[in-house]
Amino acid sequence: MTSESIPPVVRPHHPPAVTLAQVARRADARPGSDADSVVVTGIAVSTQSVQPGDLFVALPGARGHGADYADRAVAAGAVAVLTDVDGEAAARAAGAPIIVSDRLRQRLGDLSAFIYGTAEHSPKLFGITGTNGKTTTAHVLEAVLRQMGLATGLSTTAERHINGEVFVSRLTTPEATDVHALLARMREENVQAVVLEVSAQGLTHGRVDGIVFDCVGFTNLSIDHLDDYGTMENYFDAKEILFSPERARAGVVSLETTWGGRLLAEQRIPVQSISADADTEPDWRLEILGADPSGTRFRVTNRAGEAVESSVALLGEHLVADAGLAIAMIVTAGYPAEQVQAAIGSGIEVYIPGRTECVSGPDGPRVYVDFGHSSDAFEKTLRAVRAVTEGRVIMLFGADGDRDPHKRAEMARVAAAGSDIVVITDHHPRFEDPASIRRMLVEPARKAYPGMQIVEVSPPEAAIDYAVDLAREGDAILWAGPGHQDYRDIRGVRTPYSARALAREALGRHGWPAWDQSSLADA
Image (cartoon, rainbow, N blue to C red; front, top):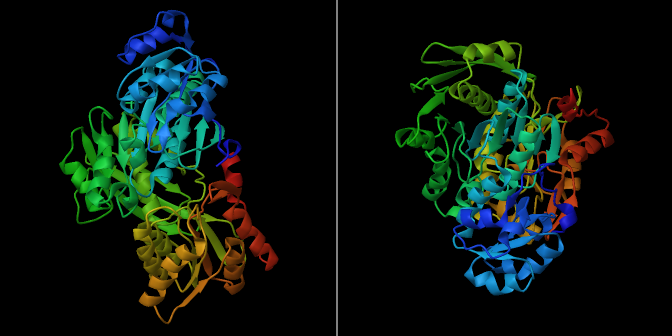
């Protein structure tokens, strides 16, 4: 992946300055004789992210040591290098002042918070974790806070927001160095409330270290990332880290899956629950009041009888559950329910990139582009699409290469179970053979549903054209996986690619109108 293809780190315009001696003391390291004269204004762990004035943290890695690249960091403007004993010799050869410490990964969040001063005068902080629904919950949270009159910040898989300014995302949860740089920039822009999407990798890799959230939320847990965590228990343990006193002051958990109940039972911070299930007794009750293809009206009510009723342009009870979770989190964080109701009584004004996003026009088949890439997401989204579709449902999807292969068969079976026609294509092949990935999807789908129309079409440009050609008035096409993303990862290269644009082009070729829902983001 080239450096040109990676979005830049969002940094503060006027970063605070600390001396290398102060950094060394914070890292439990002995400063050199010249450390008082070296001024540090930023911190980076990648040579591609280094800016003049940075401290370059040379971490040990699986394939080498960051200290081997210290000369590149210094050439890019790093004023000093922090490394461990193993990297000391290589770092010293770069010619810049160095400090040596241990447990560098564990220290990264605290050092980043110290250098950028993000622990001081912090805005209200919200964090969201779970398998599915993190991005939806985060965007709804920000939208409601914004409608309440607050200057907001957002960091999700889809994009970053700073008081209305939009940036491209790098990772679901960036490195701790980048997260604190982003928070420092938000503080410069007088942001009052920040919403961060927090992945399991972000928690186990220390990317939100140095942050204490005012309120955290848990959406659900389903099979995903077992290539990283091995078992669902390990995966849950990674998520549970967010609900500890070192990370958060309070939390709200959805009881959508049994894992939410586990979090509630094992709570180490004050935790409230939310559910639409009549067989549960949650702290917050979610009720669906009405739904149509344009959106859903719903109400959430807590044990004290405080209620917030609103509507949102989201399709499916699972996405409305995310909106309910967002509202419960805002009230749990200390904002009065009456203030929330006054702000969103006429509806939540939110655009969520690539989440069951309709790209078709008023006539012809409906085409939805969605980011969901797990069997659980497939099942819920297909059910939502089926509920508002008079005709057939055509499912178009692929699977990530070099990612958990264990979930592919279940993805394929669920896709076939919830649709009338399945079209299997490519997604991010990365360094894996695309034909092999497709075979791991086609075979279990055909085995589970031998009489069903299950078609393999590559590349995706041909697959969406094939699906639109099959579709008739009243049918729906769900293209799951790519969502809002604007690239495909092919052998480490981010190749420009937009499922939304390809779907609109295919509709146009077959004489159907299309619609650009993303224009609502600027409304």
